[in-house]
Image (cartoon, rainbow, N blue to C red):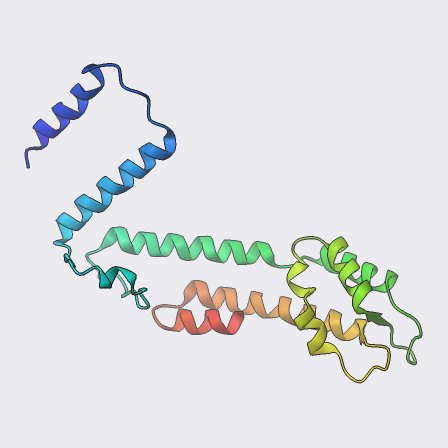
Length: 194
């Protein structure tokens, strides 16, 4: 492949005639196709002619070798982005205080001793008002986990708040472990954090 000739043809193409300008999406797709093509040629990619192989999902992705600098950088960057996204999902102190205030405001009478309770309707109302970060905690599954033998079908506000706190405390413990871990341990820690 003569690179000089390829570059000359590429530079001459816009002057050849009035072409429609390609959209940014089309340019990105073309760039990705070219990158994939040249990368496959460079690595001596395997060519599977059987269509059956295209329908089987890929379950295992091997770790990049030491000489595959591009793949290693991509892996590091994707891990860093993942950890940043998970860190942004954590509730800060102000959001926890707001959640406690909303739970206390929407408690359902009668109280059992000193313990405040909340029914499912009010639970969903609090979930709507609490914001998008708290949405993961306001599901029917979480409510059912915490529902015990209350004759009114309510859960304890304190138990729910402790559940949210424990879930929130688990992520900061796991995230530093994820950022420093190598290889197969990363996937194990990831499953533990979820």
